[in-house]
Length: 463
Image (cartoon, rainbow, N blue to C red; front, side, top):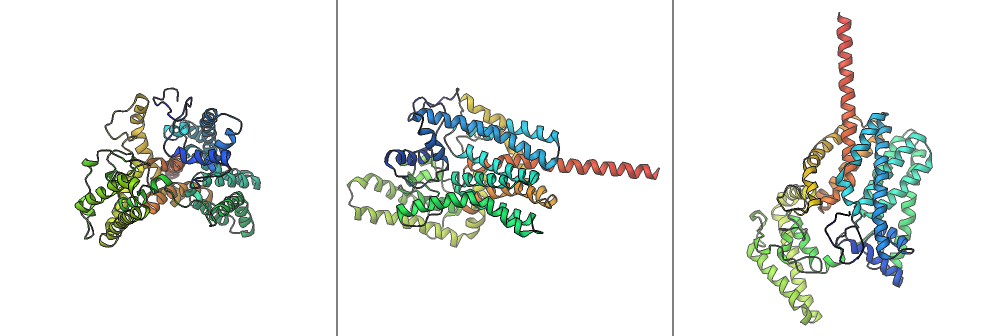
């Protein structure tokens, strides 16, 4: 952190880093403490709550610095917790020590400890949820299930996409107690209770404010993106697997001048759309005209009446949606299959800014990414293969399936189901990808050792 080469423009004296998303977590808390209103009401408050508690006793800069320190401390605790899980499953002190040091030096997760983003806390919350779930398996104390539920609730309020993981945990609890279903349902209720309580308060506050039912959050796209035609353009680029990360050099969405409350001028003239995306509804000339109309509307917006603006805006929205629908109807293979393959590649290896496989000039501290690049790729390949070994050969232990379930859920929900991809979204599953390798390797080595011993025994008997 001390070697960071970025000067904090908005937070003088802050020694961490932030992004445009940071303000979506902090601004509602600032407004709540100053004006009594949690606005904008777009982000889940799990991150802002910690910031708000610190802000009640500290200055803003000190609160933000302490927030970074807390992320690092909790990340360290999560390292110990994931190692304990490995030790509990394998009943091996050696595996516990091995997992501890692997987790300790996994720079992919610790990289985000000094960012004002939800990634660091999300990883820690998920690891601690799993840890206390396994602690219950060890001691059979229901209080550990409640604590696991607290960390699950926090994980959801950090990132709403984590909610379906609760269904997985509940199903595993019921499966483990299929001989005594009443106890299984009781444990499932205890696990979900913290989330149900907190979410009820969140829904109530949202209903009082907006007079509508908002169980989590309305959209994963922020206000600033929706207001600059980002959402329909996002759906269009998403429909064929293009790059919608406007800040990534060469992203196709920046062709339309879309960014974070501003025009994005990254090499727009050099952006080429693949010919296979064109349909009877649009071609390259259509996209160029759409670009010109959108930029023209932005420049003219200060001089237009509301009616004129709405007419031109609705035309742009309609064309984006029509082009997206034409891909879905005329090129179903591209829409349903090929686009997901392209998005998977972005999910694992975006972005060009942080991707070690691109030949960009990195600051000194970022060159560490090059060193870890082959480790990262190897971990992904071995990790997903290992998680399949767990599913096929260790499925009699429902608790172990939770490890593999988290790995595959994070993979499926982002590039396949939601089609919302950014490499940092992989982060919450990364400790479990590493843990899968350790567990599967332990299983395979035991099998090989047992097979060798059995072979030697048979050979001795024959003699």
